[in-house]
Length: 135
Image (cartoon, rainbow, N blue to C red; front, side, top):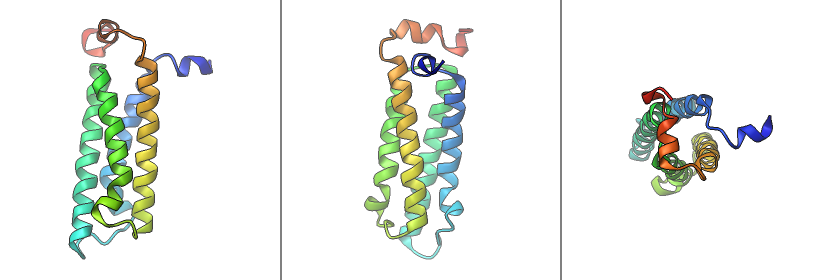
């Protein structure tokens, strides 16, 4: 049973990716970070919203048509989210840094799992299993 987790791409992974996208986009407000108080807060909010939207739409696209580049993009977005507090200067904001580190880490783990599952599959196999074409 556990071995199947690492072999077969499941739809819950795509739904989890979409949920992560929503949480990432809402994270500045969930962390109660003073967004309007300063330019750093606005930059952190815009960054979170943009990354959240990208993660959501990539996961949604992955639900329809399974491609390897989607997981690679999720992995890069997860890495970006983890380093964002240091790039934008809100690393002292404990709650928001925690949210972004945690959500970014979960996104990295999800992308790594999906890449592992698709590692040996050919592009044709991935296309055959896409829901857009009835797979």
